[in-house]
Length: 98
Image (cartoon, rainbow, N blue to C red):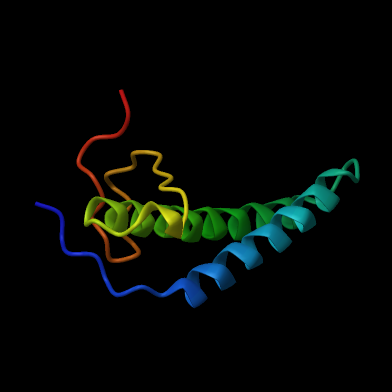
């Protein structure tokens, strides 16, 4: 049985998503330059991984709030079905999309 959703924290979500957008723009800049040094690519990949983790947490939290009955006007419920993803304190759903 999934845990109860935590109280709304739209401010934290907004910050995480804004930072992810900025990082994505930076990653596109990095990729636009041919032959980037390996350390630059590794660093960018590490930051993108952290950002994706944050975005998945936001999506999971929104999905839990929607399934708990929060009005759908709060935002889309995005979920990519990663049951192992629990770094954000949420267990998520046990199975992803078919």
